[in-house]
Image (cartoon, rainbow, N blue to C red; front, side, top):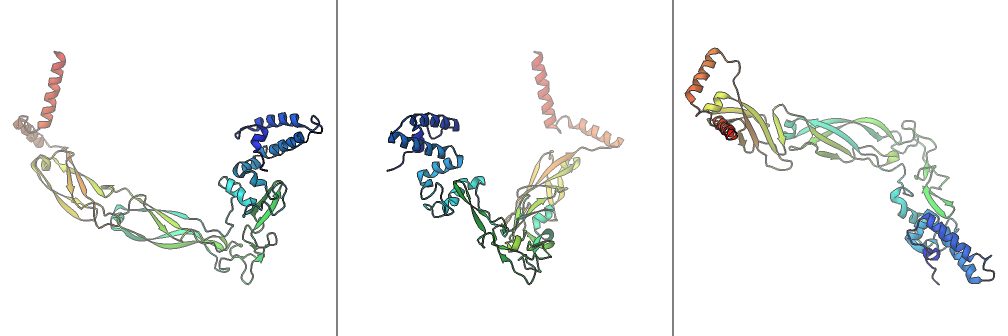
Length: 376
């Protein structure tokens, strides 16, 4: 006959608190206690059922197992079984416990000390020109490498690791803790299954030593600030022959004295002489590739005017195309004028009659109208 649900046995909801469980148990235990129900076999059985239900639900771990697997969690010797554990599950109850609590660290299996080595990060700053053209460079990394005398085994040359006596080479041990049978990594060998009785003197039994190595790095044209380059297997070597991690190179691009970059486009702020802006002409501007290009300036060019040079911007990563270059004109006001220059400018202003500066004349005309409207 199927067992009654433990929560129904105690007459509480599944989400009942510990205090609710305790109150329900006390009430029902008093109601069905044998001293109050002498000779009543049904009350006696009910009393046993109430105690069994409360014994499971009052314990957080048992309750979690019951909520997940129901009565099946305690079948096949679960209540007081030996090291064999819960035979109803192929992996034993340790696997059930790991499945339930592994994400919280309750019984997560670790890979032992011969797990892969750590990944490394290297920050590399390059110039904008290097980002445009690409670059082959070398870097030096301080990391763990394989110990040469012991070839990464950790044992003194001529000796070999011995089978761990604690776990008999399995790397894991089982322990009975009341209701639970818990399987853990062997504390003696840390999950390897062997112990090093004669550690290598060069590495202290780790199978690796710290050393500096030089690596060649190819930086492709068009990389952007924050680009990550991965060198597989160039990180730290794991202990006792564990696989090496990876090396991640993070690219940063130094600020340029002339150019500003925005994706594939290049921006350049160019001061423009007053006379060139007024009369027109041409100027030469540098490009990111290291050449010069001519820009035609039409007469009457104002500050803020932008000239677009197609295909003169940055290279695009893994693409034959290039961005554009934008030249921002900034008309420069003359300074340190001689008397003669000042006289010529005054003559120029007088001769202009307001027609040479239409924008400023129009602005002040609007200002005048604004104040006249306020007075009316």
